[in-house]
Image (cartoon, rainbow over the protein chains, first blue to last red):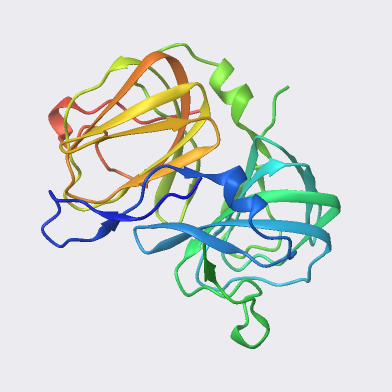
Length: 133
Length: 133
């Protein structure tokens, strides 16, 4: 089903307002791993879905907390002193400045929320592109 | 299962960092409707779960977009010019300043994200308390 963005008549700024956003449909539209896709924005943040599998890299975000919600599957968020296991329906927030390394033994699907413009690796040089879908 | 908050040794500010937060467990811990419970915070926002049933009230938030994710069930978000139906696994963002009225014909469970201190009715006098759980 194609859902087009519309303009809400009641909004004087004529900001485009989406229809309902189905996360599973968005996830079904791409296969690439570790490549977050922005599905909505709010309060200066990107709401993203991402497919992950394998080990990412150790990184931290100096200026932003990192929000994870597992939609399908299971991931580990490795911290320097412990490992947090996250299953579908569970969330975790990595506080800003805390080093972490996400790992998925099998493909997992996540919802991520970060300020628009944040690099997913904490480093613009190695960041994945932000692709709205 | 009880999960206690801990302190992450690597964080010099000693900000408490939670363990994984299971949304279904949090929702199972209360019955009250239209009473959001804060389960995590990030970047100055409260991440909340809420049980809803029936009709809320028309309101808007002048300074913040309003993020909805349906975890279970189905809701309508009535806007002045249309109705957006949201099912489990679907998200919607009501842009700031846009009047809306959430309605659930049957009990539904939602994840909400709003800046800490935001009133859920757009009006402090009628707002539900924010109860961390």
